[in-house]
Image 1 (tube, helix red, strand yellow):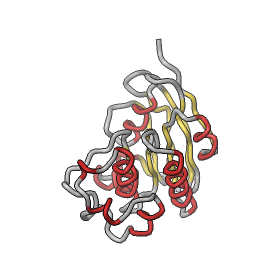
Image 2: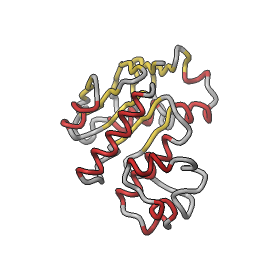
Image 3: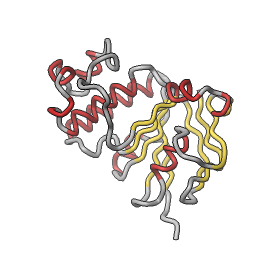
Image 4: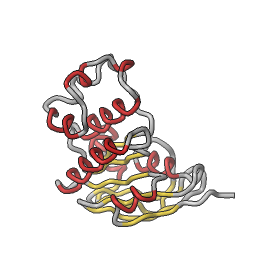
Length: 191
């Protein structure tokens, strides 16, 4: 399994080419405004871009959009929930993942507005992983978390990679980029 990004040019002019294989993570780093999030959104087919995105040798355009979004899951920096509870059908049979992320049964059934930003973010990570995607596109997934929760999330993400998943990670945390990824791509602000 491999995700290939070929001369992908986003709306702000960022242009990237890279490959991430099963069990690997590529980190996109750079200052705010350099286009890291736009690259993820373009890969997810949420924003227009030029260039190619290929999964397992098959162009993104060959997939139905709903199938693509199941195989290649995008997690924005601030996750949104449209149901009153976190659990629902998103996290069925994920009790062990919840425990690994430090979420209790109470957290999974509490109204969303009673959860902290960090609890919501960890719940969103569970939701993104619930349909067993091949690739996770993670935009600052731990920015709202304390150090213990960051360790937990990184552990769950390493397990995901150990099971053959691939990750494209946007982070401002250079230490996290070095811990999690095999390679880093630094984007720059276009003048």
